[in-house]
Length: 168
Image 1 (tube, one colour):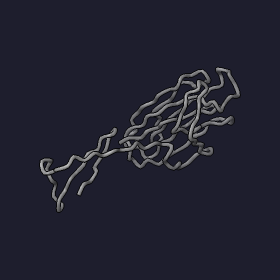
Image 2: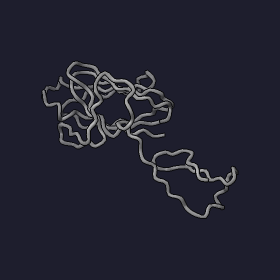
Image 3: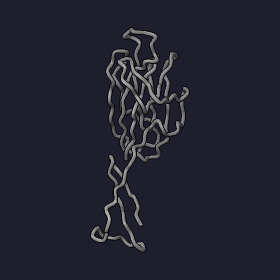
Image 4: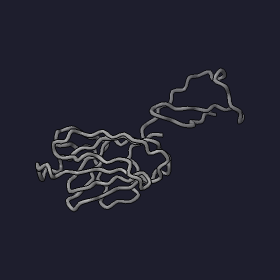
């Protein structure tokens, strides 16, 4: 019997048993290759939201960078958010933030957005202001044990949140 007991960044630990007893590595006659696929935030169900969850196949920012595992957040009326129930399953989140090309209403630097990320109502990340000339921003942080993840958008524009990978 083979049991995957944990994985981290593409590597998996396995436990091999026979009749309920652990088998030491010397008794394994085959090498087992295990592929661990990332968990993308965009693929998890949204728990709560102040706007429709808008995920798409491909989005572009104003600098014509392409985003494939993304969702849009923000609307002209101000602050919005999405929440996900993680149940403490993940320890880490990373991703990319960018100004949406769909939001072509203004080239004014004052027309910008800010993303805040909360783990169980604790603020763990605040982005700098993101406007139409901002290069994509990479974020990477610890969310160990968080049950609820909340991404908040402040201001009045659309931003892209891409490749949010959750890992254990």
